[in-house]
Image (tube, rainbow, N blue to C red; front, top):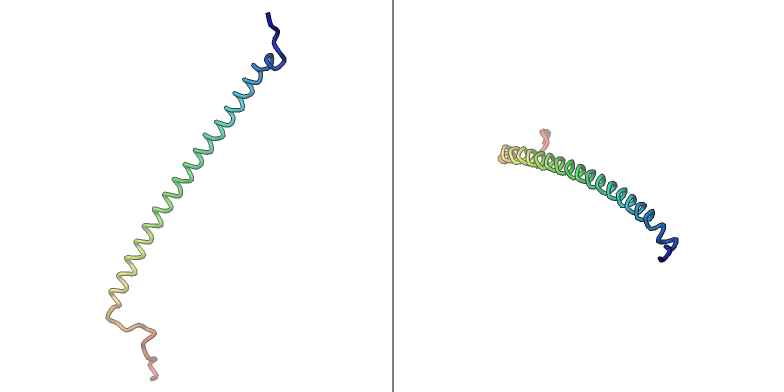
Length: 82
């Protein structure tokens, strides 16, 4: 019968330590992915809100331009004292 070396005797402990280390890393990565998902969803919502706001402002601008199309621009008007 062969005797185990010190490394072979401790390999069970090393395996448990390695498994624990991998579990900790996995837990960290899972939490990190969840946080990234949450941030990405927040960014998507904000981007969607900003797109709607740009569309609204664009419509307001188009309506104002159409309304004022027949009137001279203020910078081209002579002051009343001329």
